[in-house]
Image 1: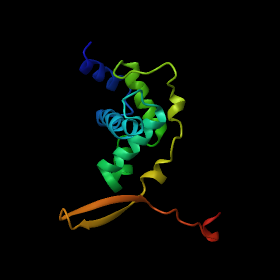
Image 2: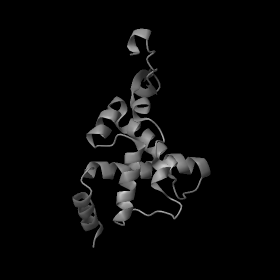
Image 3: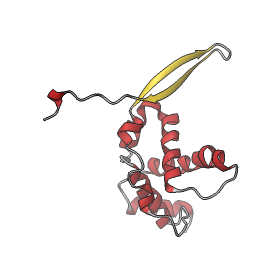
Image 4: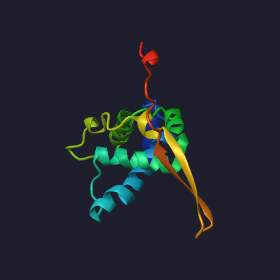
Length: 150
């Protein structure tokens, strides 16, 4: 069976996530290898579930900015548990490899999507390059008022 046939079988078997969600996981893995793991050690090695989740988070923000949460939810990715499910679906169809120590638990509640993907854009103009730059920071949590507590 070719990789394309395996991928079609996966999509037919596991219908919760669409092809874009799986493709984004591959992109996030590649991004993680280049920016998270390589930066830490200077060499490529196996990526842990937590490292992949962090790379996934950073890559989603880089790609989608303030729309990251909306895009991910549109793909039925609501938590790092979903990231783990996608990874293990790919493993099941031999489209990704794992080590014996890898587990779905590695992806359980690594971070809260709403906290990490509710972002404030910060724009600035770089006079040297004559270009606008945009960076994102987490929105501060709203303080609950006594009247909000019921």
